[in-house]
Length: 99
Image (cartoon, rainbow, N blue to C red):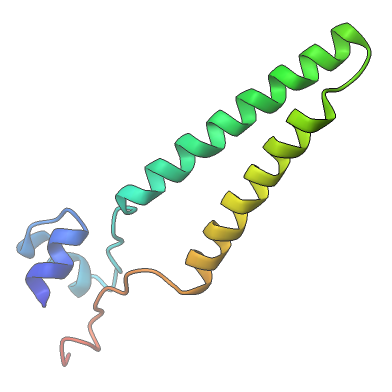
């Protein structure tokens, strides 16, 4: 178990144990899905900025395109909220080690 925790925190077991001894809780790096979510949010943001620019220059908004991006954004936010509410990877603390 200690090996898994140290690996997820991108630390050697020695470094991980040192952090635990200093009463510091090492954190895990975000899962790969995190990068995918950020990429998706960036794409949506770029699309919405382009729509805003187009609306400003033409004097009207492409409502169909705006709604599609807006719904896409809310789906990503809902999925992210769902994942966050389930919690993340819990790493051991001194109590878990029997200290």
